[in-house]
Length: 183
Image 1: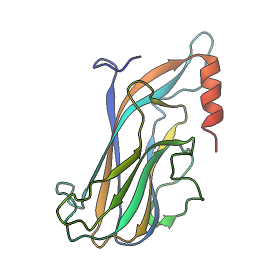
Image 2: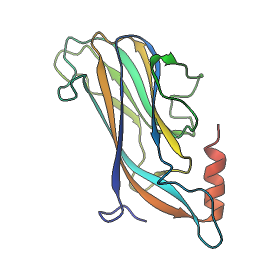
Image 3: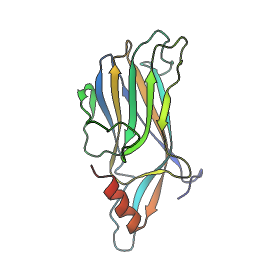
C-alpha cells in the first residue's frame, strides 16, 4: 500500500484533560485493521500511520483553549496493547514512557496553557511519523496517553486524527515489528 487517496483512511480518538493532574489513557482497538499472523501463503498485515494531527480545544470541542486557562500536559499516541482506558488521575505511566526515545511512541505533543491570546503558545509536537517513513503498528490496540503535570484550570480535550493505510508485511519485517512493539 502507498500513501495515496485510494489506500489512506482516517482514524481518530480523543481524551479529556479534566481539571486534575495525573495520567490518563484512551484506547483505540485496531483488531479489524491488523493481523500479525501470516497464514498459509498470505502475509500478515499492519497499520501504517503516516501522519498524526493533534487538536487541543475546550471541552465543547469547537473552541480553542481560552487564553485565561492555565495548566500543562504531554499527550502521546503509543503502540501499547493491554492498557485499559482510564480517566486522568486513574492511570500511572512508568518512567520513560511518554518520550521520543520509547520505541512504542508514534507521536507526541506538549501543551502549555496560559498564553496571552487563544492558542498562544501553540502545542509543540515533538514526534510524528512521516509519509515516507510511517510508523507501522502490528498490535491490536494503540493508546492516547496523557500526563497532566499541572492541572488545567478548565477541562480541555485532546483530539487526534491519524492518516493510515493497511500494509502487507513480509515475515522478517513482521517479526522485527512484533519484537519492537512488545513491552
